[in-house]
Length: 286
Image (cartoon, rainbow, N blue to C red):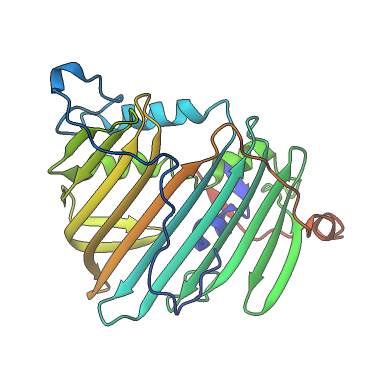
């Protein structure tokens, strides 16, 4: 699938934090939970998960996607790579609100840092909005703001559903992360969800929003998974190297407002639709 502009989204992978910030904000789970110990023989684990391992990460990913298939939802993601001396390499924040039909959505992605990860620069923001008929975008980079329609490779208005399928909604991340975590423990919690924890990785390398991090150590992973396989949230931290320099990586993803998400029109919608020229920012093949 080829969609114009989505390459900007993939390269940016981002949302409005400044480089000075040093911590990742996380939101408590919707339900406060306590851990209860249940004999493994009495527990029916989520798809692809057993009491002490991820048996099939792709089965889990499929179950996760199925739970979101016919409903609205919101997903937020924050990732950060920071040198051990405290200097920010890159920090990215994304937020997406999706209607049940998947043709109406609103996406915002912002990146900050010192690495040239946004159209050749260290920072910028891209927003997408679809009303079900047309997809428009707002791009902020290097002190400039531009608006326009998202187009396909033929220069025609992009199909909203195809654009949605090309956005980084974290579902594709699930089989990668869950497929390589090791030293896994799974505990059923009092609200019926499952806490998945891990302390090592089977791989020495992990890509974090387009940046290859090598020599992975000190893995700390936790995820909350529902009985039907929805990965409600996960947190990941580890140490590694980027271009030979030691770094600390943190990543947090949360799905929320499932079935109750509203997609609101941005204030810049009219400005974008009034653009006289369809601007093609690039393409990405998927």
